[in-house]
Image (cartoon, rainbow over all chains, first blue to last red; front, side):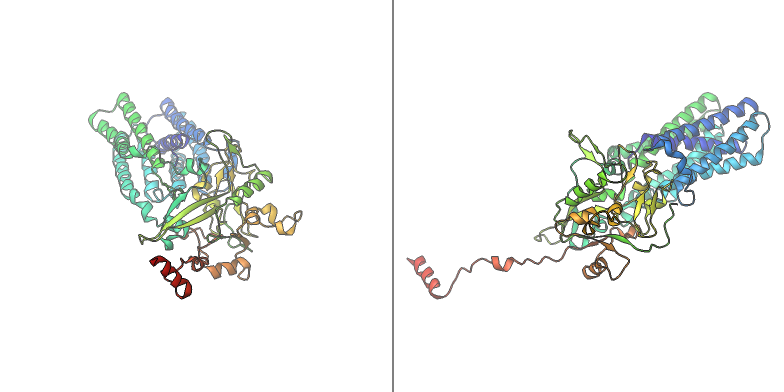
Length: 290
Length: 245
């Protein structure tokens, strides 16, 4: 799949934002007034930046309001509805908290809504039977763990963040282990795609067109996979190992926290790039590529 | 509503004969011509006269070869038209966040309401067949409409009230009809020839069916057998005599 910068920015930034909303909703970090206001503004800023970036992905961004209508059937629509519900709930909670009134049930509601939103985002990918690498419970697990870990890092909840990062690393490694075999395990081959298996081993003789097309650009992205194994190590180290090491070695402080968060976010960008770039869509079979 | 109908009154669709298709791409061109000039956004071309031309098409013809295991057996070359299969369990419909993508209850055709499409591209991701293409100029999703503006169109002659690709195919490789009606021509054809689904394991329950290539029957081969070296009768004697001379 094409690793669109707008989608990478959206999933990483909004993941961080909703993760931070989760911890703020539970009352972390403690402190009223400008501390609460700063953190709440940061969470809303991250989430909104992600959402604006997702609008860039649309062919007709001005019609985005229509996307709120199909929540009964579509994960993308559910995500849109939950994003607004989360931000409204959290906005009210944050505003009250700024003035020293922390309404715990309202915060808890915002926390739960934030988790549900991340779950819906991940299900947009995990539901795709056409992309076997994504179709696994590990996809929502990774999205939720990275959101929770990133949010905990920003909220300064270091000990919890370290454990969540370890869990994220484990889930990511498991996903790669199983994911590399999942396309073959899906049962979809050029033989089932063409029905020509009875005549021998099918292969593409002539593509339907000499130029490119939308399908090839969007779904048969093979550029950059050559460096995938190196990028996996780099991404995993920056996103999880370096932050865990920094948390373990250094006392809590703003400077260390800044480096930790920067490392985690850069690592997540690499991992999210791989999430798209390594995902193989079955339509590639018709073009003799994966 | 992008929920799928529980059942459809009819299942209009195509039956594509992989034995007969000669790979001429006439259906590609006629599809583009009809669908770029009729309802909705045109099917745009990008860099049409430049170095890297490309465009939006609703129907594309791949050519595959099936290589048999036996070393001396020749590969089987098959031209393979591919367009929307109007699936009964269409994943492109249920992922749509706006309700633009829908399957009609009355005839099973899967359509896009272009005024509601936000161009998120999720339906194209959900389709295993590559049947949907986002138009780069219009920013909305285009797909085969089964020429819904021809098949019910009383302003055109009755013989033209079939999809443009079917009407134009010079080899008769494309057939249109109600696949839910067991007495229809297309249903009989499917039963006779062993029509099959593409990627059945994807669970899309496609309406369109493909007919497999027939076993090779070469009518000309017996007539083209080489003349035997040894001949009897007068000509044989003459041949032998002249050879000895």
